[in-house]
Length: 151
Picture 1 (cartoon, rainbow, N blue to C red):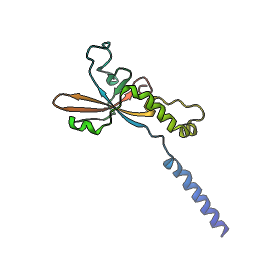
Picture 2 (cartoon, rainbow, N blue to C red):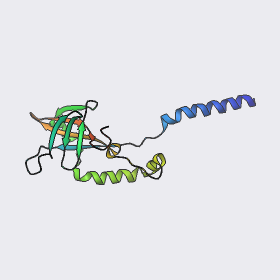
Picture 3 (spheres, helix red, strand yellow):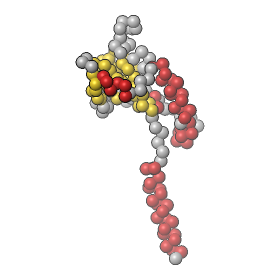
Picture 4 (spheres, rainbow, N blue to C red):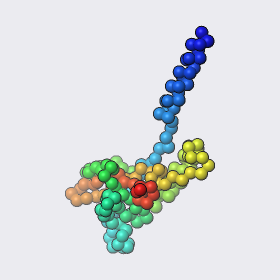
């Protein structure tokens, strides 16, 4: 009887050991949607532009830079679907990042100790929405460039 009890405890401990990484809580990133607008000439030439290079499709917004590579998704939708996406302004990103860090402070300290450095790609799951011709929009999944997005 004592032997079966010990075996049961060992089996439960072993199952718990293997299942604990599966059930561990991950720190969720926040989806943000930014509207891309072409440069109208009021800013320097590099801002408000998109270009393709070896890393993929790059978007230079006015304060931040993003990259859409081959592993990311993109959807072409009707402009009527734009109302389904809560747009974020670039000026709101720093405040949203502070809110996210404050909300997840316990988990950040638990997983990363007293000091944690998470770039914006860990905080946000960003998407760029670009309006194209004929009443269509394209929603690009992107990464912040120069913040762990590129090797």
